[in-house]
Length: 391
Image (tube, rainbow, N blue to C red; front, side, top):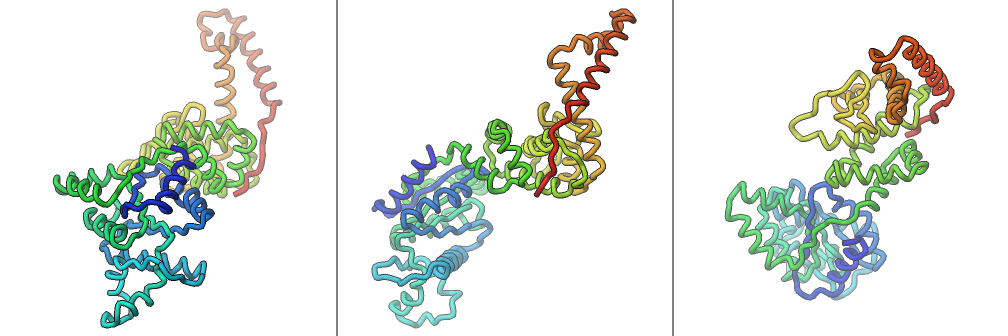
C-alpha cells in the first residue's frame, strides 16, 4: 500500500464511515508508523480541513489518564487554532465521564452546564489517534472498551496505532484466554486493521533530509547512489526499523561535532562513519553490547567490508569516549585499506608476485617491489577529496 492510498482510506473513514467503529494501523516497532502519521497523514488531513488529535498511551496506567491526555491535547489544539465553536459538535461523554474527576468543577451541576464546560473537547470533524496501545499498563480489553464508548456512543472517529504482535504475545504470557478476549472485543470495536508496510524510501529520504548534519546531507547530495545503499541497509540488515537510521544519524552528527576542524577528513571516512554505525545498530540489542571484533582502526564484522565500523565510533557508542588523535590515524588507515582493496580487486600482478615471493626469482621480486613503489607514489599524488565537516 502506498502513502497516497492509505491517506485516502483514512480520509474516507473520517468523512463517510457510518459503522461507529474504529480502525487500526498495525506494524512492527520502528517501522515508521509515527513518522507516517506526523509527516504524511496529519498534513494531508489538515489540507482536507480535518484536524488530528494524537495521544500516546505509552506508560499510561488508567482510563482516566487517557481521558486527561485527550482533554489536554484537544485544549492545546484550540489554543493554537482558536475559532468559534459551532452547534452540532460531538461532546464526548466517554471522555467527560472520567475527566470530571480531576477538573475543578462540581458534579452537582446539570449535564447542560457540563457540556458547556467541555466544549473545548469538541471532536467533530477530527481524527483521534491513539498510539502505542500495546505499551500502556492498562489491560487491552479495558482500552478497547473505552474506545468502543467513544466510537459507538459518541460517534468519534478513532485510529488505533499498535504492534498487534506484541499485544497477543503479552496476553499469551499473562493469561492464555486474554488474547481470545482481545480478539472478541476487537471484532466489535475495530472494523479494519491495516498492515503498515509501506515503501519506506520516501520516509528514509525525509529522515535523512530532516535529521542529518550538513556533512552527511552533502555526501548524499553529491552521490545519489548513497540513498540506495541506505535503503538496502535499512530494509535488509535493519529489518526496516527506521529508528536504527535515526540513531545512526544522531551518533554520526555527535561524532562529527567532536572532530577537530584542523583535521583533513576524506569523504570516504565520513561514509564509513555513518554507514558503519548504521550496520552496527542491527547488532545492538537490549541486553548485550557486542564486543570489539577488529584491528586498531576498523571492524568489518561489526560494520561491513565496504563500510567498516571505526574504532572511534565504537568507543563513543560504548563508552562515550572520543579520541581526536585516533581520527587522523583512522583516516590514514582507511586510505591504505582502500588502496590494497583496489589493487587486490584487479588481481595486481606485482602484488601477487610479492605475496607469492617463494616461487619467484629474486629479480622478479625486486622488479615487483619497484613497480609497487611507483604505484604507491602515483597513488599519493592523487589526493582524496577533502572538505571541512559542519554540524
